[in-house]
Length: 114
Length: 118
Image (cartoon, rainbow over all chains, first blue to last red; front, top):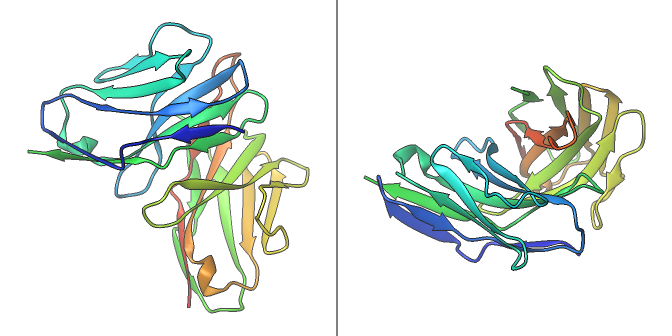
């Protein structure tokens, strides 16, 4: 079975600082995708960053970067220069090549303080 | 970018009635659409996967006779909650997948529908 674990229910960070959200996963598949989604109060799911498991290089999107450790099945999200607009729920998700399904973690609520 | 819409955004219905939620991919063809349910302060739980022109595949524990899914075209999927009860009140989210290229798999999410059953 595929599982995604986010062990931090809530995190807070001061504006302009850096914060790292943790995610671990388990899968028996060799090919898969990993995602971080942001869900602000509007509840619209927004893709933050995506990592293909076969790529060794960590994905980066502006202030967002990941630390992908395939052997450890770890996929953490680093947010640099945090902004008030980053306040949201963040979900880590595992995508299967075989089934097209996404398995979501339980989420981390991030609060950015001024 | 790829846009997915849902209608209605909010709906209130009486217990025992049925309600239909539409999910549309506006600028791409979606061979697969997904329906999720999200309870307050919880994660998204996949209810079912639908492919255009075929029957939906339901996740374990989801009643297929209660949650009817139709995927009649490459841009439209509908979820009908039949004989709704207060415990069906929830936030329902759809997504659509578009595969463009060998490494571009992604799901695009609709804005969600808040269902309240009174």
